[in-house]
Every structure is written in C-alpha cells, then in structure tokens.
Length: 320
Image (cartoon, rainbow, N blue to C red):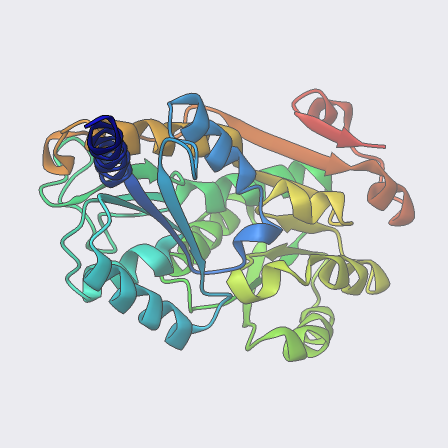
C-alpha cells in the first residue's frame, strides 16, 4: 500500500509540475536585425523585473533575422504556427512582417517611428487591432537632427542624408530633414545606400555633392558596420549625425533619439498588461518622453571642431 501511495504521490507531483510548466507565460521576441548587437538585455531585464524570467517563470524565445528578409519570413511563419501569448516586435520590418502575414497573436512593437502611416494601428489612443507598443517618436526627429547638427557645426550650408529606403519610415524622416533644410537655408542632398559594400562610394558621392556634414540613417544590416561608417566619415572630414548612441561611441560625432532604456521598459510593461488580459485595441500606443543626445568629443577634436557650449550643456552623454 505504501509503495502504491508513494507512486501515486510521485505521479501527482509530476502532473502538478507539468501543469505549472504549461501555465508558464510564453513570449517571443522578433528582431529584424542582430539582437545581440543591441542592448536587448535591457528588454530581458525589464521583463524579469515584472516577473518574467526565461526558464523559471516564463518561456521567452528570441528570433533575430539578421537583416535577411527570407529569414524574417520564416520566423513569422514559425510564430504563426506556435501561437505564443504575445510577440514583442523590435523594429518596423519585424512588425510589418507579422502584419502582412496576418498573424493574430497580440503584438507589442517598439522602435517603430510611424505606426499609423505604416498601417499597424488606426490611431495612437485607439489602435483598433492586435498591435500595441511604443513609438520611436515620429518624423519630427529628422528636423531635430538637422537642427542639432547645424548647432554643432555652425555655418554649414550643404548636408547629405545617407539612407536606405528598406526602412519605410525613413522616407518621412528624409522629408522632415528636407523641410527643416528649407527653413534653415541648408541644402539637403539624399544618397541611397545599397548595402555595406557601397558605403565607401556613398561617402565619396557625399563629398562630390559638396557636403559639409552628413546625417546617417542606419538600418539593420548596417548597424554592425558603425565603426567603419565612422572611419569613412572621419577620413572625408565629414561631421556625422546618427540615430543611436552606440554609433557615437564607435566614432560618430553626434546622435539623437528616444531613450532606449525607456522604450524597452515600456514595451515590457505593455507585454505584461496583455499577458494579464489586456486587449491591444483598448490600450493606447505610447510615445517616448525622454530623448538622448550623445556627443563624441574625440571625434570632434579629430575634425578640428569646437562644439559650442550650448550644445554640450544639452548632451546626456559626452565621450571624452
């Protein structure tokens, strides 16, 4: 009898353990680029603070497409079959790939500049579907970056925007930069980047166009080449404005963007609300409230540039 009782107890214990495992929240993180080359650990930390730790209290799957559209498509198909409880889509290509595949799982997006224009949501206060998230602000950032670049490099009259149309929201940023250029009497020339192999030629074209500075709009496949990009700009004596702080830490002159840590933490909080029963269509899409200005003074010195004190006073990160 005792043996039977012990066996029954063991099976009951096993059953309970299986039930607990089945009840563990299942999340997927879909990144269109190289997640481990970004501060993705901040997203994991934010989820952990809310009680979602991979392997203990949650099952979190990370899928990085590494800038490959076919790889991204295969990951989307995988997620459509597996039906995690929530998908965190990092960058607009990831969110758009899920949208175009009609994936019905709730999606929390981040680092998406204009989710309305991209067709992800109907409006910020009432998204209207299964998409919710944190925007990467909107096209005004294009104008703001040109203004900051003009303040940092007084007297510039011509700038070149190096960009890739693969990120659909980049078109709105370029338009914003052009409009700001008209207002500031700065000529704006745009040059498309066809990939990493074309970077030297693109910078040569910028010099040929009379650029006195460049605004570089990075994308997934180019983010890992940020040191090379900084070196190309320095070799051609071109002050460079970038999107993300890591680009400046690797030699770019200046960057301006929403605070990355805030974006990760707010996306994690939205995923938590969905996992607890919140419906994306009833939750407002959030916008950044903090922005980060980074300046590399070593790069400024190499360029022989005296960064005005008025700009330095506004910087959140100064690299000496």
